[in-house]
Length: 313
Image 1 (tube, rainbow, N blue to C red):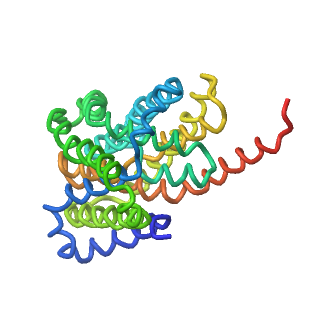
Image 2 (cartoon, one colour):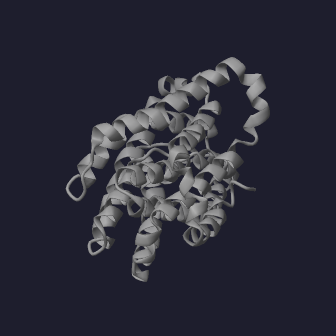
């Protein structure tokens, strides 16, 4: 329940951190380690066997990677180019970075609720996270490098520390202490939710002066940008695998994996490299994907159930 209401907690913490920034500003040294612990918790849900899917179904996995790292950064760039031309350049950088980040942890939950291919979902989440330190900096540099300074190497080092090392460590720990860790896995979604909310609180508190000076229309564009980015991500994440001949359940899985971004990671990287304003697109994306996502999941669940009721042949 805590994890499913992430959008609500974010909506609550944002005004609180604007009013009482002193509550969240001391978190600055802990932000990256906290996010790393969330990525580690995702690693605890993965097993080495998940990665064997690359050998069993290489086409499906490669298409999932293709949609993640082509559709989402390109959409982020198009959305920013269309909506943010008269807004601070930081917004464009943040939107592109959000699209260039790997899939979010919640994608596995949504695939489970939709009745999609959970094994494929876990595989894609794991692979996306492992390759993200190499692809995210390059894609961010390509799409955002003309409007803001992008230190791709520093971005790479940050992602190695925040994503690669924790997820690999999580997989190793689970392989060695699986039975012991099984007792705490039930609480990991709630823990991840609390951490993301604290990160959002810090970002809003850190950028308080600049945020309150923004015109209202800026927030309207951020909401619209997040919504368009998300919905087109779902759509293209479904259509591209369909054109390439992937079965319905697997293309629904890929669609969810494609659209559900790791907005917590994007938030931390954006505020670290460009400041609080650049993190706002990721914050808004987090809220929008956790409000709209469950409705899309219900649609996908209906599609899977309807397909299952059809007579064979």
